[in-house]
Image (cartoon, rainbow, N blue to C red; front, top):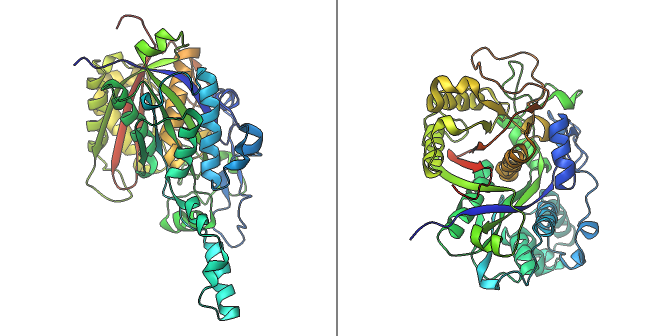
Length: 424
């Protein structure tokens, strides 16, 4: 059976750079930082007080009738908001396809009860002496901590009854979700998939734990916009972010038949596992090499066909070195002509949603001939030596782009996206 071609027909975004796709793209191309002081928690006594927060987003304002989605927590509201925008951008509704031909694939962290909620329950139990203190909360509140609730809300927007997939592979989750949605359409299991990710690790537990782990920068609390600096010699850790990016993927023939506007084509998907350390990428870039090579081969391309790499680029020394080593191994001498940039320099690390933001960045570059920069490039790391598009967006005709996503636990994803061409 010939694999079906898969195209992108809609995008939606809720990020620290803007509450929709156009404003997010504008922020990326302007090189504007969305990192600032944390407002979602009291950071008194914390070593880290900054993050890339979504600002002034209300689901009730973004999605008609969203008042009924009362079980959604903060990250889920971002996901549903981005999904609604993506569907409108694609011109898709419940009547576009049969429900069985549409599905959802989302990357997200598994939600958990907020620790303050547990403290409050414990205090109530201690004060009253009642064993049933927990029953003062509605049993349906448990739904809020299910990863599938936001995805189910997205499915209801379409009355979709096709494939539904929730992926929780940390920072590569939305990359896996897009890749698996791509496969579902390729293999004929769906005509349309909503794919992407959403996350919000700006809780006090996440900020505290990632800080204690030594992964977050502590050097820029007073100058947050300079904090995220992938590939710069003065980097000292990553910056947490939050938000969502959702894309509409469609079978090409079905999209053509309905006269859809086509933004790009998903061409290849590769994934691998490092089997190295839980929090570090191997210095030789070995796991990343495998996923990148697999994605390029899956696309039927050669490394020389890639024009732009949207790097995972977290702003940690180990990850940046490992990723750069992998790029050099795959591309050889050709690596020096590549443009490479990291949207995390502006948005912070959207964790489970970060790969989807990177894919959005690649699609924007393909459509606008403009590659967003890596900001805060002040002191080049001489060990790396590639073109990371420092500080200012650059005009470049981008036909094919590679998107990298690597995660705690050692999971790696690479996606290849290209300009849509009738004959390929």
